[in-house]
Image 1: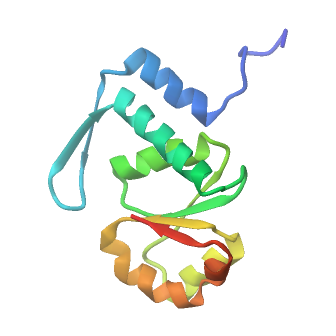
Image 2: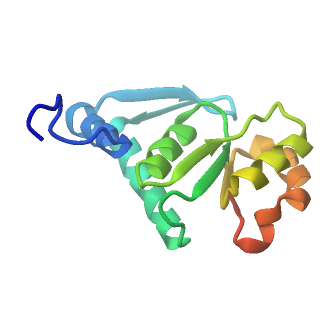
Image 3: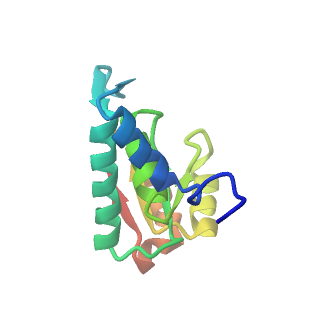
Length: 143
């Protein structure tokens, strides 16, 4: 790779590895949907992201397949971001402000295989489930 700016490709998995190696004890603070404050570190985030990636492999989710999320911007979504994207799958964030019919259409069009969601979005998930075509072809919901 002579002449390039870096000696490795820019992959999301490398970002979390770097954060774990060089800033592993640095604290990540976020407010949970439940209202309390959640504290973890980059090392813990990397460990949990690897667990997400392993779980997706256990579900036989192939590289480049899509994982939808309905999640607030917190530590859970951060772990999904690195676990899904870092393992070669596609993280597909859904907009919870859309009408359920629109959300179901987007899920179908994207051919999302798994939906990870915060429990506060359970009513929306229940509303889109009957219209989500992937249901019969391996669709999974995870909280």
